[in-house]
Length: 186
Image (cartoon, rainbow, N blue to C red; front, side):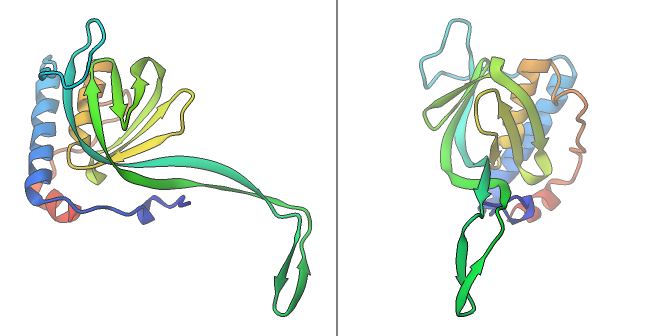
Protein backbone atom coordinates (compact mmCIF):
# COMPACT_ATOMS: atom_id res chain seq x y z
CA UNK A 1 0.00 0.00 0.00
CA UNK A 2 1.16 3.48 -0.72
CA UNK A 3 0.08 6.66 1.02
CA UNK A 4 2.56 8.87 -0.84
CA UNK A 5 0.83 9.99 -4.04
CA UNK A 6 4.17 10.94 -5.59
CA UNK A 7 5.06 7.23 -5.60
CA UNK A 8 1.89 6.07 -7.34
CA UNK A 9 3.14 4.75 -10.69
CA UNK A 10 2.23 6.81 -13.72
CA UNK A 11 1.67 4.95 -16.96
CA UNK A 12 2.83 6.80 -20.04
CA UNK A 13 0.45 7.99 -22.71
CA UNK A 14 1.25 9.27 -26.16
CA UNK A 15 1.59 12.98 -26.88
CA UNK A 16 -1.43 12.75 -29.21
CA UNK A 17 -3.59 11.39 -26.37
CA UNK A 18 -2.49 14.00 -23.85
CA UNK A 19 -2.82 16.83 -26.40
CA UNK A 20 -6.34 15.77 -27.39
CA UNK A 21 -7.49 15.25 -23.80
CA UNK A 22 -6.12 18.60 -22.60
CA UNK A 23 -7.50 20.56 -25.54
CA UNK A 24 -10.92 18.94 -25.15
CA UNK A 25 -10.97 19.75 -21.45
CA UNK A 26 -9.91 23.36 -22.06
CA UNK A 27 -12.59 23.87 -24.72
CA UNK A 28 -15.25 22.25 -22.53
CA UNK A 29 -14.28 24.46 -19.57
CA UNK A 30 -14.80 27.59 -21.69
CA UNK A 31 -18.07 26.19 -23.09
CA UNK A 32 -19.46 25.44 -19.61
CA UNK A 33 -18.30 28.82 -18.28
CA UNK A 34 -20.37 30.46 -21.05
CA UNK A 35 -23.46 28.48 -19.96
CA UNK A 36 -23.07 25.52 -22.32
CA UNK A 37 -23.49 21.85 -21.51
CA UNK A 38 -21.52 18.78 -22.64
CA UNK A 39 -22.82 17.05 -25.74
CA UNK A 40 -24.00 13.47 -25.51
CA UNK A 41 -22.69 10.67 -27.71
CA UNK A 42 -24.29 7.53 -29.11
CA UNK A 43 -24.76 5.18 -26.15
CA UNK A 44 -22.61 2.07 -25.83
CA UNK A 45 -24.53 0.77 -22.79
CA UNK A 46 -28.17 0.58 -21.81
CA UNK A 47 -29.15 3.93 -20.32
CA UNK A 48 -31.72 4.73 -17.66
CA UNK A 49 -34.66 7.04 -18.32
CA UNK A 50 -33.40 10.57 -19.09
CA UNK A 51 -29.74 9.51 -18.97
CA UNK A 52 -27.21 10.60 -21.62
CA UNK A 53 -23.80 9.09 -22.31
CA UNK A 54 -20.92 11.55 -22.67
CA UNK A 55 -17.95 9.31 -23.38
CA UNK A 56 -16.01 6.09 -22.82
CA UNK A 57 -12.25 5.56 -22.61
CA UNK A 58 -9.53 3.80 -20.63
CA UNK A 59 -8.27 5.00 -17.23
CA UNK A 60 -5.73 3.80 -14.68
CA UNK A 61 -7.56 3.03 -11.45
CA UNK A 62 -6.26 3.13 -7.88
CA UNK A 63 -8.33 2.55 -4.75
CA UNK A 64 -7.66 3.88 -1.27
CA UNK A 65 -7.60 1.32 1.51
CA UNK A 66 -7.30 1.74 5.26
CA UNK A 67 -6.08 -1.21 7.29
CA UNK A 68 -5.17 -1.66 10.95
CA UNK A 69 -2.32 -4.11 11.59
CA UNK A 70 -1.94 -5.84 14.99
CA UNK A 71 1.65 -6.25 16.24
CA UNK A 72 1.00 -8.25 19.43
CA UNK A 73 3.20 -11.26 18.69
CA UNK A 74 6.90 -12.04 18.74
CA UNK A 75 9.19 -12.00 15.73
CA UNK A 76 12.54 -13.63 14.99
CA UNK A 77 15.25 -11.00 14.55
CA UNK A 78 19.07 -10.98 14.76
CA UNK A 79 19.35 -14.64 15.74
CA UNK A 80 16.74 -14.64 18.49
CA UNK A 81 13.15 -13.96 19.40
CA UNK A 82 12.14 -10.37 19.86
CA UNK A 83 8.92 -9.78 21.77
CA UNK A 84 6.92 -6.70 21.04
CA UNK A 85 4.42 -4.96 23.21
CA UNK A 86 0.84 -5.11 22.14
CA UNK A 87 0.49 -2.38 19.52
CA UNK A 88 -1.45 -1.60 16.41
CA UNK A 89 -0.56 0.48 13.41
CA UNK A 90 -2.83 1.91 10.79
CA UNK A 91 -1.56 1.65 7.22
CA UNK A 92 -3.45 3.75 4.76
CA UNK A 93 -2.71 4.24 1.10
CA UNK A 94 -3.55 4.06 -2.55
CA UNK A 95 -3.42 0.58 -4.03
CA UNK A 96 -2.87 0.38 -7.76
CA UNK A 97 -5.34 -1.44 -9.89
CA UNK A 98 -5.46 -2.04 -13.60
CA UNK A 99 -6.31 0.01 -16.62
CA UNK A 100 -10.08 -0.20 -17.03
CA UNK A 101 -12.79 1.09 -19.30
CA UNK A 102 -14.89 3.92 -17.90
CA UNK A 103 -18.18 5.24 -19.23
CA UNK A 104 -19.41 8.62 -18.04
CA UNK A 105 -23.10 9.46 -18.27
CA UNK A 106 -25.33 12.21 -16.91
CA UNK A 107 -26.25 10.05 -13.90
CA UNK A 108 -23.39 7.66 -13.18
CA UNK A 109 -19.89 6.48 -13.80
CA UNK A 110 -19.50 2.89 -15.04
CA UNK A 111 -16.09 1.51 -14.16
CA UNK A 112 -15.11 -2.08 -14.80
CA UNK A 113 -18.67 -3.33 -14.54
CA UNK A 114 -19.46 -1.34 -11.37
CA UNK A 115 -21.91 1.56 -11.49
CA UNK A 116 -21.17 4.59 -9.30
CA UNK A 117 -24.33 6.70 -9.06
CA UNK A 118 -23.77 10.46 -8.91
CA UNK A 119 -26.43 10.68 -6.16
CA UNK A 120 -23.93 8.80 -3.94
CA UNK A 121 -20.99 11.06 -4.80
CA UNK A 122 -19.69 12.76 -1.66
CA UNK A 123 -16.66 14.63 -3.00
CA UNK A 124 -14.63 15.24 -6.16
CA UNK A 125 -10.94 16.17 -5.87
CA UNK A 126 -9.72 17.11 -9.36
CA UNK A 127 -6.03 17.26 -10.15
CA UNK A 128 -5.91 18.08 -13.87
CA UNK A 129 -2.19 18.87 -13.76
CA UNK A 130 -1.62 15.22 -12.76
CA UNK A 131 -4.29 13.96 -15.22
CA UNK A 132 -6.24 12.55 -12.27
CA UNK A 133 -9.30 12.87 -10.05
CA UNK A 134 -10.14 11.35 -6.67
CA UNK A 135 -13.79 10.36 -6.28
CA UNK A 136 -15.50 9.58 -2.99
CA UNK A 137 -18.78 7.68 -3.22
CA UNK A 138 -20.89 6.76 -0.23
CA UNK A 139 -20.44 3.08 0.67
CA UNK A 140 -17.37 2.57 -1.55
CA UNK A 141 -13.61 2.84 -1.28
CA UNK A 142 -12.26 6.16 -2.61
CA UNK A 143 -11.02 5.78 -6.17
CA UNK A 144 -8.38 7.67 -8.15
CA UNK A 145 -8.72 7.72 -11.92
CA UNK A 146 -5.78 8.80 -14.05
CA UNK A 147 -5.37 9.24 -17.79
CA UNK A 148 -5.33 11.81 -20.59
CA UNK A 149 -9.15 12.08 -20.72
CA UNK A 150 -9.74 12.22 -16.94
CA UNK A 151 -9.57 16.05 -16.68
CA UNK A 152 -12.19 16.26 -19.47
CA UNK A 153 -14.34 13.66 -17.66
CA UNK A 154 -14.03 15.69 -14.44
CA UNK A 155 -15.35 18.79 -16.20
CA UNK A 156 -18.23 16.74 -17.67
CA UNK A 157 -19.16 15.41 -14.22
CA UNK A 158 -18.95 18.85 -12.60
CA UNK A 159 -20.98 20.46 -15.38
CA UNK A 160 -23.66 17.84 -14.84
CA UNK A 161 -23.61 18.06 -11.04
CA UNK A 162 -22.83 21.71 -10.33
CA UNK A 163 -23.38 23.59 -13.59
CA UNK A 164 -19.74 24.71 -13.50
CA UNK A 165 -16.49 23.19 -14.82
CA UNK A 166 -15.11 22.45 -11.33
CA UNK A 167 -16.54 21.49 -7.95
CA UNK A 168 -17.37 24.33 -5.55
CA UNK A 169 -14.22 25.91 -4.11
CA UNK A 170 -11.87 24.53 -6.78
CA UNK A 171 -10.47 26.63 -9.62
CA UNK A 172 -7.31 25.11 -11.15
CA UNK A 173 -4.98 26.96 -13.43
CA UNK A 174 -5.77 25.45 -16.81
CA UNK A 175 -3.92 27.93 -18.98
CA UNK A 176 -0.63 26.05 -18.76
CA UNK A 177 0.85 25.62 -22.23
CA UNK A 178 0.00 22.24 -23.74
CA UNK A 179 3.67 21.56 -24.56
CA UNK A 180 4.62 21.68 -20.86
CA UNK A 181 1.67 19.43 -19.94
CA UNK A 182 2.67 16.81 -22.50
CA UNK A 183 6.29 16.84 -21.39
CA UNK A 184 5.19 16.30 -17.78
CA UNK A 185 2.92 13.40 -18.76
CA UNK A 186 5.64 11.31 -20.36
